[in-house]
Image 1 (tube, rainbow, N blue to C red):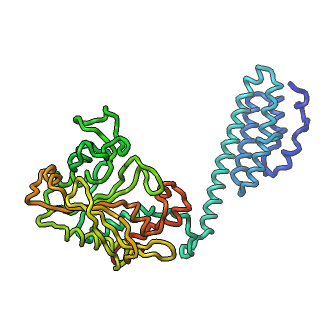
Image 2 (cartoon, one colour):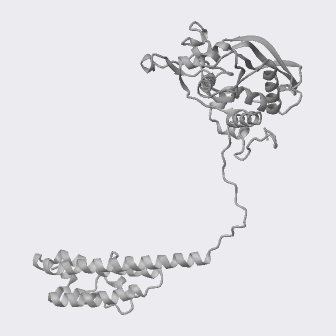
Image 3 (cartoon, rainbow, N blue to C red):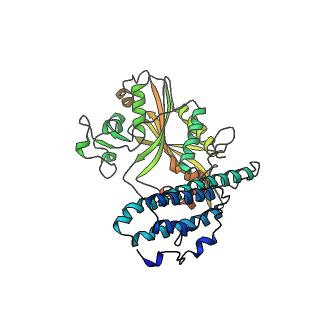
Amino acid sequence: MDSRLRGNDKVGFGNVTDIPKKNVPPVETLLQSIHHGSPDRVNEAFAQWLAANNEAIATTTSLQDLESIRVANTGKSGAVTLLLKTLGGMSPEERQTKGPAIHALREAVMAALAERKAALEASALDARLATERLDMTLPVSAGRQGSIHPVSQVMDELAEIFADLGFAVATGPEIEDDWHNFTALNIPETHPARAMHDTFYFPDDKAADGKKMLLRTHTSPVQIRTMMNEPPPIRIIAPGRVYRSDSDATHTPMFHQIEGLVIDRDIHMGHLKWTLETFLKAFFERDDIVLRLRPSYFPFTEPSAEVDVGYTREKGRRVIGGSEGWMEVLGCGMVHPRVIANCGLDPNEWQGFAFGTGVDRLAMLKYGMDDLRAFFDGDLRWLKHYGFRALDVPTLSAGIGA
């Protein structure tokens, strides 16, 4: 055995006696039992030391004092650490008989320290909770908030206006077949809209029942599905995303559109003009809205018209209202009899009108935006400037653009 740890040699134990441990026997007692005692004497000495040490741990009232005891026990020069160091100087037979007792002592000390530490931390937390108070009446600082995208806001505004006119909101799939998107709408096979450069088609192996699949180019297929599945009279709007192969400052491959459809008996162009006039006055929140209907052509309406709205110039920008100039905002017309027949209705009994416009374009005109591509850039600065608060729900009573 290492002669440096024999007898009453106190080298390395100076820090142990400096720690306040009440009636804990000095570590020299343990070392004497290790060096000169029988296994029974070792166990008895360890038991007495452990009982006194555990009492000192249990009566500790602060985490700082407990940390001092931990260092005195298991620190670099602690009592348990010094006992472990004696194992290196023992013969194999001694390690076999005295080693388990030393390791058991270490485990017992560590368990007592951990238990007392948990109790003191819990007590400290309870004391802190008992003294800390939070005044719930104090104003809180406003955290970062998101905003409603202008397209979403305008969608809600349009739904509110048309709901007041008796229209329901209808939706449909964005992946369509060419029958609902083109054929049922009286768009012939040779129409330019069916060309690959205008429409996003899926590969031929995506065809269902021999029909080509594509991304819808307008929300008109929703009108077809509604007329086929619901009995007239029908009054719906169909807002949603549509896709066309086009991209510049005023066109994007994906944009938003809203279409309207009315099917009833004895419907005529006068009903259409009144509906559009009422809608545009409510949307732009001006009574001086002036409309001009120009004859046009759409395969799915007959007669067809482009709708121009009057505008004036204020501070160098065009403002909807008045009649200094004209701007095209939507297309419309009476639903073509062939379209009505394709949906299983009798065109001699049922008539109707339809109209459609771009939601993004309406947002640009109303809120003064000049580049459609900014709608989809995800620029937080742009969204903060043009976005709407979450609670700014559009209502006719409060003002659509409030």
